[in-house]
Length: 260
Image 1: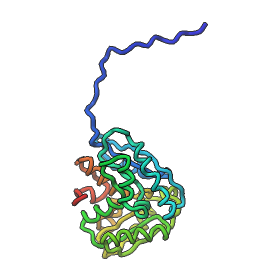
Image 2: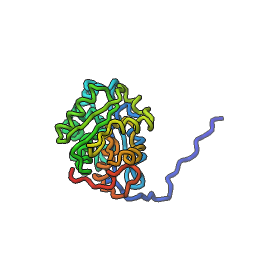
Image 3: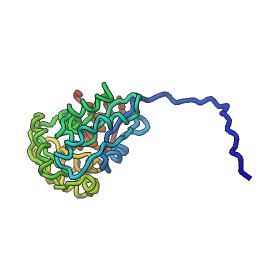
Image 4: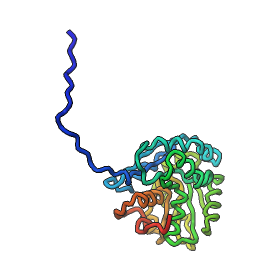
């Protein structure tokens, strides 16, 4: 004998809703191979005050300027998938090296074609703003990339008005391997890359898990450290008007952006 399904009835309870927090929604475009950004954002972001909603954009290793540039036509469609018709405080495009080779403005234009008017945060623009906010004129840079991918990074910051004392790279070609670099290795490489005359050390790459060791490196160097994920989280929180004190992830969070 066939068992009949239970009857379905409309509940007599009237649904009640929490106030909308749309002004504190942050969109995130991560690479399809990214193993780090969402973890770093989960560590840094005050999740009781802000929501981070991620989508992915297809990316193919190795991390060369050509492969990074190939993402450009896919950015608009990726942005269109983040909470359609919901207000966003900002959209972060989470690739530092691609932001250099594609260009901050070109990335913002692509995102604005699907999400007009939403502030766009790239790691490079956020890092520039962070460095200026910290009063840096001279910087050292550490990247996990190949030499051919690192060279445009040095040129980008030099063209942005900073004196680049040195740039050292780890020579890794796959961002999935960048995500596996140990804390001890990042600390050792950061200390070796930072020149005494530099005001700030910048650690590039959203795929490199450097957020957890910022405080240790700052203590060892006695100077501020800026990383890609730290900087873009800092700027996104500013756009979301979140003023909660963030501790343990570097001196940057003690400061408000000078301008955007």
